Figure 1 (spheres, one colour):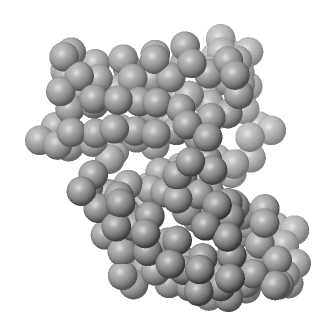
Figure 2 (figure 1 turned 120 degrees about the vertical axis):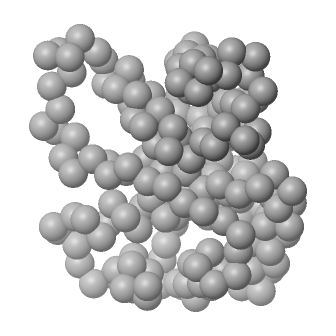
Length: 183
């Protein structure tokens, strides 16, 4: 299992979204095409390779991920937590290393389910408390959104998928392995 975040300066988000949409257009994909690891196929491999190249070569984007080698080994009962509690703790682990108190952050998280609202509020509070940001001047927002609303979340899904795939033992030669092997 992998959790990750793609992030950049807020002033860059519109430009990045436009560049990603231009890559979609180049590959005759609709503007609203949702980039997802699970959608990689031989017919779209050149699109995904161009997107990976954009991330590594041109963009002002940064990426942070946390890899959980085998979530089946987790013992939630021993730690007095549910899987969902643990999941949001891993969001915290992922995001805390991104934050610099001299900056302002708006974190947008892919909506996992309809029950995550309270956990997102708690994640915001825990992150803010970690940085003594009691007025939310640094950690301004932590909000769930649907992945189809954000090219950055979609790109994070692609990169997370690649990391997870690269760390599996049962991979086969597929379009996905071509993406992982590209870099």
